[in-house]
Length: 388
Image 1 (cartoon, rainbow, N blue to C red):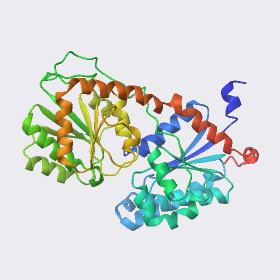
Image 2 (image 1 turned 90 degrees about the vertical axis):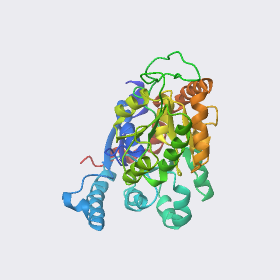
Image 3 (image 1 turned 180 degrees about the vertical axis):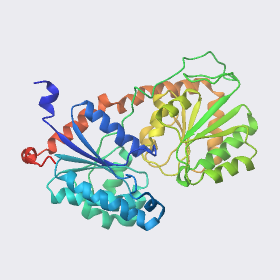
Image 4 (image 1 turned 180 degrees about the horizontal axis):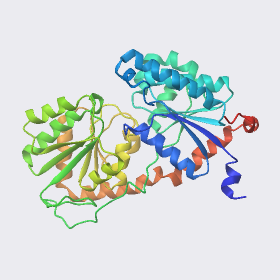
């Protein structure tokens, strides 16, 4: 018998969470975790919380769509809790907790199936302050609570709850530095592993959903200030969302149509290709936990300018692995853009340190934390569960 078979005796895992599309951070982590666990010999049964609406027209009716998605989910969840040994629940704040996390915890408890709550989302503190009395009864049914960052661990601690940290996972097979270094000067050439065709362009990228909480309007205004002093700057924004039209109107209003491009929602290879053409990444969010976009940029050797909100300071260190600025501070972000553009040594430092730091988020470092937790929760009677 192999060492893997000894460690994981026919482990059947139920994975409950969102899946792409869209390619949001939690959805991508769910899909990636399923693939990695299957490569370890774990039998993964995935239950999507964002499955398609049936019939399709129900998705266009606000109250009806929740009902039409919830009922099939509950039926499948009941079946899942009866045929797996452990459930890994990808949980978030708001309605996602009430509609998906709470039922999973209660059904798991009813069917004696341990549920690991993997809580995510930068809005946890606000949500808990408003709703923790409703969250606590369900949370008490969890076999364990796991968060990806020290920030969320501290939020849980404020409400008297213990959570262990297992970080997000970066696929280093996909996210890695692309083009080789090219010679440069601080005045006008690129540094780092990613350069644009032509030495006179310095391209910044944003890879967040186009929603108000991600502060992309701040980034555009900051870019406008930096651009007024350095017209070689370019900005490419990848993503889609409800703020798209307003952001495009802002670009037009500021006279940036020739310097700012909206490239739409990209898949993961598309994001890698975008980073291969970038010199720096902007993360202007007003709420955040452990943004995958920042980790992906670091893994690609891209210097990062980010707001210092939520869990971001737990992920990167100011002037060591990123430049941090206050949220919604246009002038501070513009100054960071200009500084990074003009300082090749700083870019090289951030890139090298980021690449070294990202290794802690690889599967090789994280795998045993998950596998050890699952096996510790498996009960002797698990082998008698139904297999239908």
